[in-house]
Amino acid sequence: MKLGFAPRIAMVITLILGCGIATTAMLSIHKYESTLFDFLTSRFEFVVNDIRQEIETQLDLGIFLADIQDESTVLDEIMVADEQILSIEVFDPDGIVLFSTDPSFIGDLVTEKWLDAGQDNQSRQVWSMLEVDAGVVGALLHNNLGQHAGSLALRYSRAFLDDSVADQSTRLLAITVAVWLGVTLVSVVGAVLLLRARHRHQEGLRSAIDEIMDDCRDGEALAVAKTGSPELAAFAENIFVSNDEIHAAMEEIRKLDEEGSK
Image (cartoon, rainbow, N blue to C red; front, side):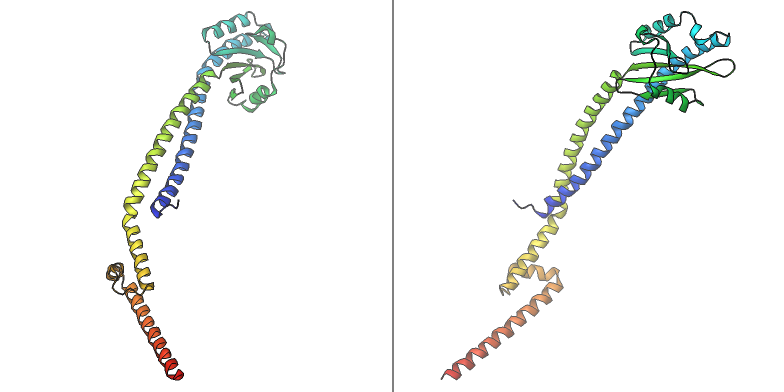
């Protein structure tokens, strides 16, 4: 079925606005995720900084990082107090885990990404990243001479972040669909109302052209079109004059043929 002029215009407007609405929704979801990640990072930075200050206080007393007593117990108490914390590791400059809330990690090497993140954020001393299964907030450790003595990293669950983003995405999807349907309805109705007069005018011109081609000089559509379009009236007059001249010439030829046949 062939669509009319107004529905085609409405369809184009709807598609353009739909793309704009979808793009806005995706950017909003990304902004929401980024803002929520920054919020969680800020929250766990306080925890990390408290641990860092407690460790650096002992480093300032001349105790080596590996010789700090009962640090694993302190880390366990902090993790138990917050169910979103997955683990806390303290490791030396080479990345070897010295203390951890998970004893199986002690002696292991941390990922290169953690070491690189610490090197890239030496001026700020605190770093963060989002891994596949967890968010990570870390900090560099220094002794009273300003020497890099090691680092610590806190891993927290991504469940809250992912669930919140999923819920927000669902809400935005529902809003996007509702807005898009509303825009579609308004576009169709608006296009029909705004273009109805234009469409009626075009149909009138088409009918007038048909009457001109049919040599219908007293046609209703032609009479209406002439009042609003002087150019069409002049065009019609030229066509009718040409038709009259053609008919006259054909009549003259017919008479000459009859006379020649006698």
